[in-house]
Each structure stands twice: as C-alpha cells, then as structure tokens.
Image (tube, rainbow, N blue to C red; front, side, top):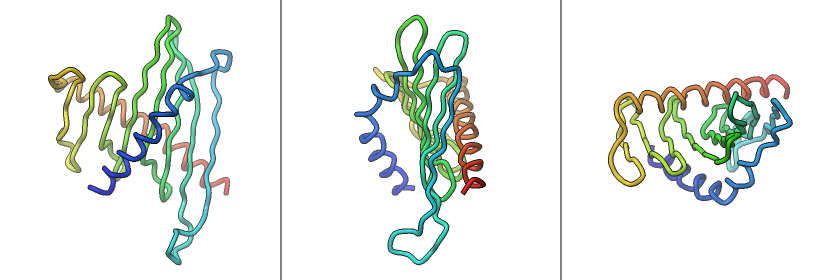
Length: 163
C-alpha cells in the first residue's frame, strides 16, 4: 500500500505540470478515443506479458466537454485523470488512483482529497480550506471514481485484444 501511495505522489507531481495542456479540449469533436498499450517484459525480470500504457478519450455533456486519460500497469487501471471544461467558462480536474480495481485516492482540483482503505473505509477526508466531506459526498465521489475506473478499464481491456 505504501508503494502505491508513493507512485501516486510521484504521478501527481509529474502530471501537475501537464494539467493545463490536457485540460484544453476541442469543442468541435463530440467524442474521440485512442489506445496506446505496450506489451514488453518486466524490467529486471524474465516474466513476459507485462502490459502497461495509456488510454484516453473525450466526451461532451449538455454544458461541458470532458477529456480523460488513464494509466494502466499489468493490464489494470492504476490512475485516471479527468479534465472538464465548462461551456460557460472554467475548468476542473480530478485525479483518481486505484488498487485491486477499487478507488483508493481522489484529488479534486481546488476541492477535496479523499483516500480509502482496502476495506472501503475513508481514511483521508479533507476539504480544501478545512473540514470534511459528508457521507453523501463521500459516496458520490466514490461512485464517480468507480465510473472513471470502469470507463478506463473497458478501454484497456479492448486494447489487449488488439495486440
């Protein structure tokens, strides 16, 4: 678990510099998807079939354009970043981390930071500026994380059959 938190911290620092670039979404495209997966051996190991890579896509709602990308390791989604640009102006970004196909960590730009244990208990629950999310808000954030995972994992699984 500690290693996954370290990976998350590294990933969040690395991705922070790229947020503005990835947040810009072309409103003229209703949806686009791409899959980039690589099948190579694990570094320093004789094991073959190690799958890692990135998947991404965009979609629109009535009032926003959403772009997302996800990073997979051993064929499982580990991190998802969702950037939303609202038609009336403004942007938001949410970063998700997963362990064993379950939400582990969520960081909202300018919002909450939430982490869950392996049993699903919220072990980190902080709002920016102080305080904590309500149980209903925690459930909503957990549900959003689960949907992001499912969307990305579906794309990762589809990419496996192409290679």
